[in-house]
Length: 229
Image (cartoon, rainbow, N blue to C red):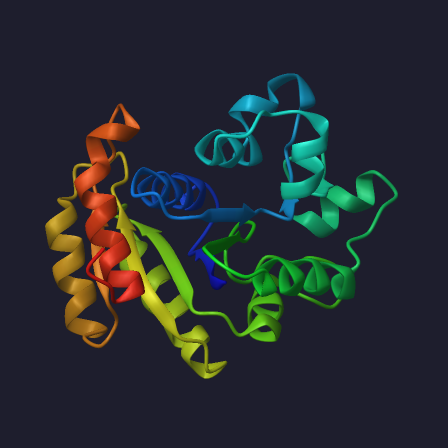
């Protein structure tokens, strides 16, 4: 199985929007896709369908029920905090070794494409010692890095790319996800391209309906995978 890790420059940037869009694209072209978002905070079972794992399950064509939620997001926490803080509120902790096993076992399944979606930004703490960056470094998967077009994103994005390069992590694609701002998406992308000329980059316009962005996700997949499909 081909596997990618989807991360971002911060929280609420659009990781799930991008991951779900890629899943829908692959399934629309009769290709197998699977997903894990092992850790999620701010989770409420009453609104599970609107949560990140709920959105991913919908894209996969699976029901949003306790069994599928356990499969996709086994570490779910109620408090909208960093995972280490949210877990502590519940007297729990994330087992980093178990997290790695879950991801490696998922990525080892034959056939299709697996997306492993992180939580928050690249340096979000998971426990007392590990961050999302440590998680990505241990897995060593190609990355899909999602950023926005908001004021400040250029510094955030270039900082993130520098940190990832220092850990020898390969960015398969940088996705500039349109933010609710007056700053033109194309101008943000042009500046980023000037400072990160070797990073594959694509922009995504926020559409009201997922189907409206089908062509953009097709192009995004071609960029990330290096395929013509």
